[in-house]
Image 1 (tube, rainbow, N blue to C red):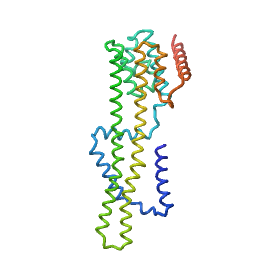
Image 2 (cartoon, rainbow, N blue to C red):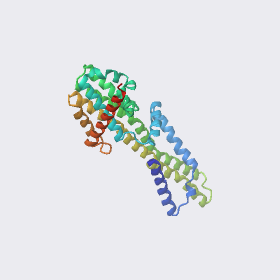
Image 3 (cartoon, rainbow, N blue to C red):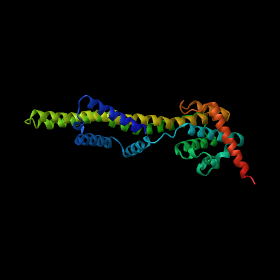
Image 4 (cartoon, rainbow, N blue to C red):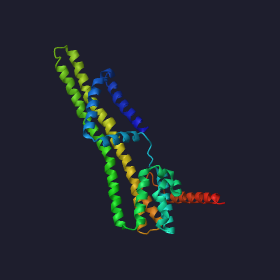
Amino acid sequence: MLIIIGYVVVITSALAGYVLSGGYLAVLFQPLEFLIIGGTAIGAFIVSNEIKVIKATLKSLAQLFKRSKYNKTLYLTLINLMYTILTKVRQNGGLSIENDIDNPKESELFKQYPLILANPQICDFITDYLRLMISGNMNVYEIEALMDEEIETNSHELAKPVDAISSVGDGLPAFGIVAAVMGVINTLAQADRPASELGELIAHAMVGTFLGILLAYGFISPLAALLKQKNTDTIKILECAKVILIASMHDYAPQICIEFGRKTIFANERPSFFELEKYIQEVKDKNATQTENSEP
């Protein structure tokens, strides 16, 4: 929704300023300029990216128009899941969660946290490293290094669509100049026409430069910036899970581990200490009630 509002503000501001200064909107309607600029930009995008990057970029563009799922509710769910798992491990040993992490979709533990199951990236990150932790074959520093490598790999992968969109945005002013130059060439080829007609042809040609710059800085580059922000949210939740798991490997109590994770969350999504404590207690009470009701 904010993207649409932003685009409306960009278009309204540009056109209103143009009209109020005495310009005529009809002059700006140049479909062939759009064809030249848009076609060359799309062609350059195809040439400069592999098919997997093109697919990832198109998928990312669709995600831009959806509300971010990385909110306080998701973080509370993640932290509570981690607390439940670490408490179970502390009380019953690492083997007690083996079935849960091997098949989380069928696990009664994970089924209590549908938001995590709905996000395969987070779910796989947690289960993969819990599996390594209970195997006992890797120390904390090796696992932390592996986590950092995976998070960095995910970050690089997410950056590819951003770079692709940014490249298109950077190129649009140049493609606008191409359209303008072609318009000027066309005008010079008709230099025998009256001055009033030549002036109109030159005006049409200059629309290309205007469109290239407006599309670049008013439409495409802002999308790249927004996608970069959303990618940061995706990485941040992995870092939160990482900090909790590493703290557990250092043998801190589950309550301390989740506090470490809470501190890594951005301020807008970070629950307060008391919010987190209250949420965990509510889930405990709910689970206890369900257990009592299920008993014969």
